Image (cartoon, rainbow, N blue to C red; front, top):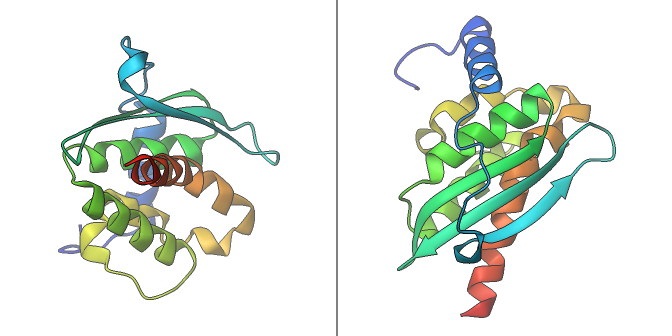
Length: 149
């Protein structure tokens, strides 16, 4: 993404594409093979489930389901797509860099891909929870996985 200028129009288009056509939005049929967590926001309509399947330290699948605003839907959709096939350490690193970006700290933009569309989220503090809800859920699931091992 960083090889061209990420304009406000392009950022909006990417967010709207993921909102209107969310990726990875489903409840897995074989739930017993997934870790899951419910995430919600008291300040927004967001109430989602995040599902994680890890095999041999690799994120095999990340899905989500539920009710979510445009920002939460797009952010979670982008996150799920990004995490497929990543090893756990890389997934944790990407989450950390995303959260640094949201918090206006120095971050490695080269690992964030389409998630860069949320780089200005801190300018709208009410949207920070929406933009991080799915990411926080995945982080909790990955930490739970590490604790269990």
